[in-house]
Image 1 (cartoon, one colour):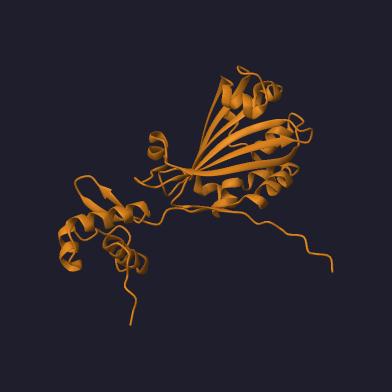
Image 2 (cartoon, rainbow, N blue to C red):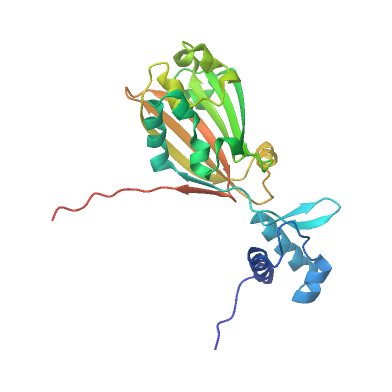
Length: 270
């Protein structure tokens, strides 16, 4: 005797359709069967069919095109960010020569793509610390900050892989005029090398990860379907004398991002 499947009918249909997509029976770029066809073949209501299609959209497997119907999506570029290894890898690169630092960067490390596969966007501005940023840095409200907005996308996709909003104390970095302009981005070696040029060495990086609904502009920028959450990573970087030298919010689309943390444990004494 088999146990009864208590899952909602729409979810069972969604999983059946997912299997057909993953197996290639419904190939990338192909039109999905219409709601009428699915209702007839599954013997479900149109409401259940719509809910199943909505679930497929939230999984990132299909997309609705206005006036044309619903189509199977090509797999999106995935990110696997190994944060416990990544930042030491970035710090080690700081001391390499320019040519070596230009070979690869953090996004390539997370995706397996090459420099030639990527498009990079950067915006710089000077802002005053609000209460939240002042508290994060331990500085007075109104302290000048350098605000940097970054996103990188695969040349094969339009949506960025993530969006980063980085803040640095303006007085800390102003000694190197190149650090104040987006004209020098992408910077070989990234932020750790930029800070190195003004005599800053990082001691540690703390991260807090939370899932939340995307803001409207984030959903549009990252091409996130309704119902998909973002992973918001608040990264705080400390230098070797204990100062907070960077605060960054990195926003990842939840449907195609993995954050991988490995914790090495000490062995008990025999």
